[in-house]
Image (cartoon, rainbow, N blue to C red; front, side):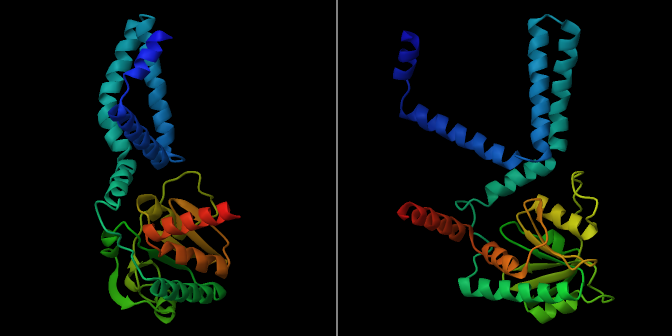
Length: 275
């Protein structure tokens, strides 16, 4: 007990700040890998580490030698296996406000206009059961996706969006990429998700929507060609069977900058306290 008290006496302000930073970093790392395949891989690594330590304590020399060599070679394998997660982590760091300014810093009026144009276009496409795939760029740049399609660089409008996805036209079978109030390109190719838990009912269009949101912070609007159902994909998750009002609100939130989203959250918290 005395040793414990002595330990606490020796802890200074710098030590507290040091521990707080480490705890914050670990928390952020956990939020990045939570509910991803990396979470399961981390659990596997922990099991291997525990098994290695146990084999050393129990003097199981052959098993210990195998496990230690496996862990040594595994460091290189981890860089390959965790490549998507490492990329996400570096992009997250790059999006922090002390390193860069948000790409999506649209004024509220412009955001409302853009959300309304997309919503009306989606409503029309849904009624006609015309398939569509619209990728809305946020903080992570999507130039590598834009390069796979045909450049448009046109001001967004419901008419232009509808015409892009009319069947049997040159650009209808790919994705349209939207940045701020412009349609950058159409007919773009997106990476497909390799998540095995995705429903077998979903086709290539929905898998592509999930795939790009696994690799970036984009938000993707999907219209099903078979049913006309409207879906949105964000952070590798798919929300299906949305109505027009829900879609409009989600799009308005998507076009807000990070500062605006945080300010809206704080106002909501203060309102709840006052009540």
